[in-house]
Length: 381
Image (tube, rainbow, N blue to C red; front, side):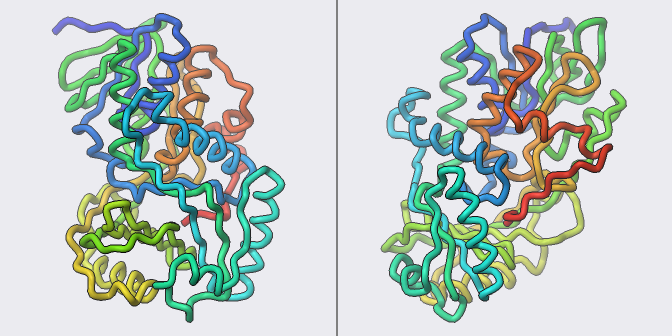
């Protein structure tokens, strides 16, 4: 079978892969770009996420990536020439504080966020209930809230990027699995289920599948797959605005514009690549949902799903060039969807130029796991 060639090969057509491809095209270098994905459109992590995007993080690096990303989401319809937009519901994240200690932690985070230009604030229980009257008041001593947070349709986001990069001349192929990467002189050959592809530069954006792909090249990645479980209810009106978060339970609740309510619970589970909900998921997820929003206890659950997401020891991404020249990695550590506009730009810079001056590229490199210079994010849900 003959070997195809391209200048830049991107493995993974999720949020990171397609965003990087778009930004590479924006640089207008004339580089040929090919994107390969083992699944169908939106079939993996991005298409299975809870759709939330937030500036409410605890670290300056995380806040900076999200400040840039949310600004892009706000302007995505125009920048990507995608009439109708990406269904950006920008009505805030409300992080519910169960006790005074948690509220104090939220206050410290809000002060840090405010210093970086994030318009977050602390809400009293009365203010929170005015925004979402259906909330259980017994759970509230207050809340942290940022009106610029919200949700984006993962499917519309991927569709907008896909259409834009194809218009720019990039080739995107679904149903094509990369089985092995090999060095060949100054290039890298990707062996795939549809034949070999040779490229001067390869960007891997497969998240939890990356360790197996890069291990034969001597690259050890501290990445595991964590099952991410979710459910969605039948539609109900009226629609409440903010996304609701209970950090102590890893609970995220979002009512979609059409009225359906999505609930996601992140919890400690055996690390695997499961795509099936665990047996105790529905009682747990539905129980936390009803405890938080008792007025919606009558709603029917119409679907539940599970998909692996990537995690790292400090729950931060791994970004940059690997020890193999021309090989680059962008692993999201579970928040790739929301940070994809900013990270796509950074990876385009480092792939095309070999460097980037952005502090996230220096901080989120692979070497930190060898030196022990981890950067744990305190506001992980």
